[in-house]
Length: 97
Image 1 (cartoon, rainbow, N blue to C red):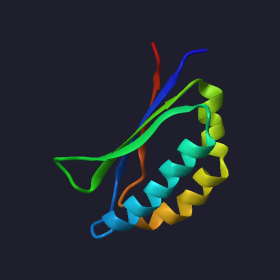
Image 2: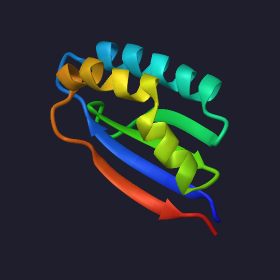
Image 3: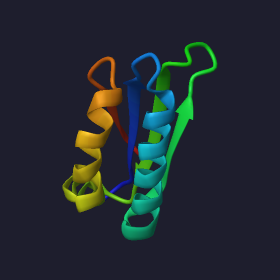
């Protein structure tokens, strides 16, 4: 089975950048510490739009991605991130080659 990539585009509400970044930093640390099937998990802020962030993710396979979405740390981050968001996330799934 091949690697799976994810690009998530997140639009943060005005004035919520610091809150978003704090919560997401905790989530990144938890993913890296607890998900052996995750090979890369990082967030980047757009240089063109300071309210837009891209999360770049790489998993060894589909099962690792599914384990991520079911993890306690991922599920706990949702209620913390929700007040920071200006729009629903836009998620793109990619097949590794």
